[in-house]
Length: 107
Image (cartoon, rainbow, N blue to C red; front, side):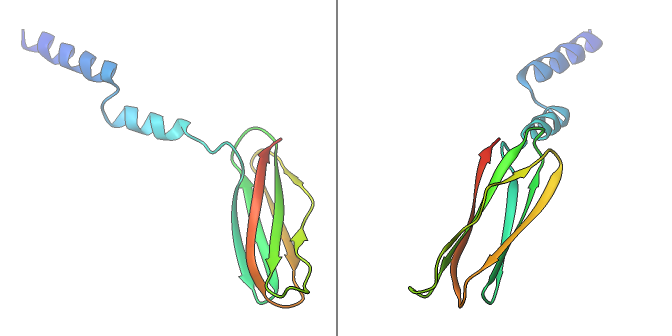
């Protein structure tokens, strides 16, 4: 009787999705839909490093807003990032950078 109760409790726990194996499986299946990017600014130069963990092609584009009104803002070209690929994007302002960001779209 005891073995039957343990087996029934295990079946209920598995059906409910409880347990460490269910949590690990849920975390492993949630991958980002688009490339993940990290940006950095050093003086007047901005750099973004993007990695695509998704099995599909993604497009990333670097945007830089310059601090000075006379300094032209930067909208770089869209760059493809293949599966498990890393790309580095960079550009600069003549003077200081006010803001830097990346736009990502699934390819």
